Length: 280
Image 1 (cartoon, rainbow, N blue to C red):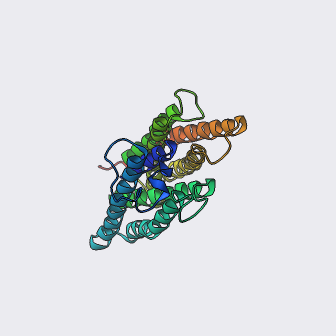
Image 2: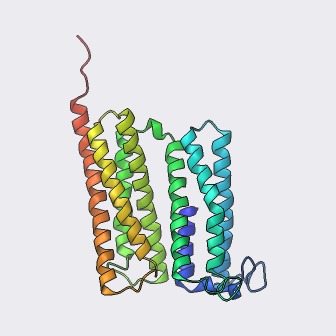
Image 3: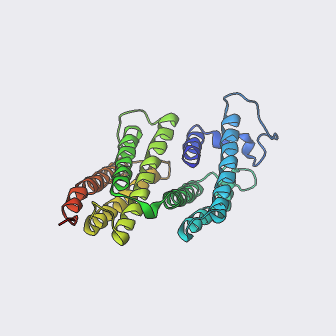
């Protein structure tokens, strides 16, 4: 739901629908529900409705971690997502009220803040999912799967990226770029989490040194990917210099993620060779 909300939000901004609803919030053109046809008012309203449902689910997830038998870090990650949620709602409201409650709200700074806070919430939810789903009981296979998802997501995002002229960077392409990029980001978050567990507790088939390398490479790929996600929006005047920087960040993200997946796969053989032999 949160990943899809990202894509819908990007599509809403790219189509200019963020300035619809007569710059009102929470009303939309003096209505609670606009006409149910594909028009800017409806796109902006649908984004808000999806965000509202997602927000309640985030709150429910945090509550679930406190009611269930989850560890402290899972509860902390889910609770922090809820704590940050009002900030995201506030920034979103400011973003769409240009000429309304907050003149000048539809600006680069608010767009950047909206994106960064949303990415923070998404990352915290990813960690809560990994840890709550048994991050402490991970395995070499899960580490390899997570790294592979990271590579695949970044590679898929490259197809839609404004740094690579494969397709026109239309509103639909922008939504596709973020959906794929965030899937890759989630894979890298899981890779770092599983690799950290492998360093601390050890997984059969993955040495601590290999896990440490995987963690370092995945973290670097994540940082480069975040840079491309920021440059994927209109946060800068997109000159040829920024385009080259975007392409470089995307290339680094792909290279580091691929290296992490390679080390994770190769570490299986190295770890298996050191397995103790039982019997007489």
